[in-house]
Each structure stands twice: as structure tokens, then as C-alpha cells.
Length: 225
Image (cartoon, rainbow, N blue to C red):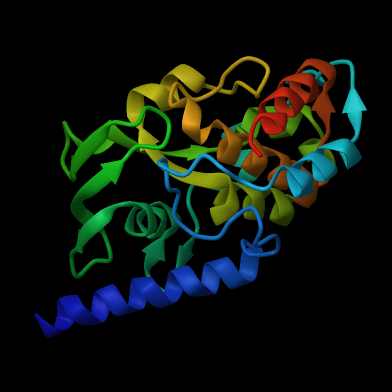
């Protein structure tokens, strides 16, 4: 029992560490909580719209030539024995249970993308019901400027808590590498936070948006206030 308590404290400390390292709280007006709250639809429109207005805009995306997941590091990074996937699961699930190997074995997800409640249970047939989504998909990032980033910067992007959400696995697969112009969460109250996160990630890593992407993001954000 004491060992499990120590593990929980370690993961909590790691979440704080990652948030500090990756600057998740650089814009507190947009992210008052670390974990997503699907019930909260109102975010201040001014910071997100201002960030969007300052993003570079191009007519389209660059070719996908050369893209591979390994361009963003070899899977999840590990911090003091805990990998990023489990750190995000611990952050986003309610009442997470963690084993001594720093793995989240169960918990409840209030899915921000669909609004559904999902009971997560680690296992061969159940783990994929909850997946970790890159809010700005890595292939999309590759096609909108990440090719020019250093390898360590791309690895940081792939493991940045700002760009990661625990979500319904089916919704994540449906999204694939879509941007705001081609995919938005079915849970409309969460669209403001979703688009604001995409804009903040693209700003942080000097990525561009396409014209249709910017138009859609602007339309969503203007409805938020």
C-alpha cells in the first residue's frame, strides 16, 4: 500500500515537472486546469484569436514526403520510470489506479471529444478504448513546418502535455491527421478548448496554418466568448 502511495506521488510530481518543462501554463487564460473539462465551453476568445491572427498562413500543406513517426522520437519518452502515455492517463482520468511499475491500470475518462464516459481498464482488449491523441497530429505538424525543427524539438512536441489528451479511441482514429478544417470533436462544447490548444501548439512550435484551417478556427473561436 505504501509503495502504491509512493508511485502515485511520483506520478503527480512528474506531471508538475512536465507542465513546468513544456510551459503548459504559459497562457493561463486559456488553460485554467491541466486536465480537460468537457463541460466547460467558455474560454476567453481574445488570446486565442490573437495567437491565430499571428500564425503564418499558407495556401496548403507541404508534401508528406519523409514523414515517419520516428521523426518525432522513438515512441513515448520516459521520465524517472514513467512514460508520457501513463503520465497523461493519470492526469486526465478520474480516480486513476496505478501499479508499482508506474502504469495506470484503471480509471474513468470523461471523454472531451464525444462527451461519453469510458471506464478504462488496462488489458489486451481494452487499453485501446482510451488513446492519447496529439491535438496537432504529428503528420500535420510535419506538413506545416516541423520538418524545419531539430529532432529534439520534434520529440518535445510529441511528448508535450499541451499537445496531448486522453480521448475515446474510436474518435482518435476517426480524426487521424486532420486539422481544424477537416475534423472537429463531436462534443461541440469542447471545440473552443480544442481549437485553442491547436493554435497554442502551432504558435509554440512555429508551425503554420492553411487558409481553410485558419478560417475554421476563427469561426469556432469567435463563438466562444
